[in-house]
Image (tube, each protein chain N blue to C red):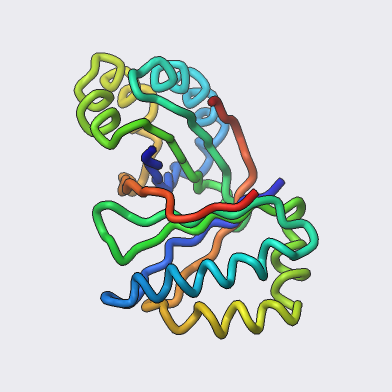
Length: 99
Length: 99
């Protein structure tokens, strides 16, 4: 299992429109092969900042499957214009956890 | 519920020692009032980078309860010397999720 992480800085004042667009975009990513879960969090200290976490079965499900899909074009159209600067996406593997 | 997030850049070559120290430190944070879960992830693109996610019932459980506890002194002693630069901790609230 892989966790995709990105900090998304949304243009100030566009937070509500971003959250609305994200709820539409969520349906796209949720339908992708290898998708295992998504969370969108909003920052308390910097309210136009969001934390995106997406769980994928394999790294390639994101980097190859999703990014080369037709759905990714729609995802970009819905979301990318909100970001300034454009976010850096990183991938992680779990070391340890405790609930 | 609040998610504490930090990207931890560990001094290169000290990853194994950090992970060992973290497994000890995990017992400290897990015993704190308001603690709801912790995950430590390791970055694929930058292997000396880690993603720390801690779930707390309330923001104050982290900022007041944990940081003013005796356990925090031990947490710092175990972990803080691994970081370069010293990480920025941010707190988030969940907007939406899907599994």
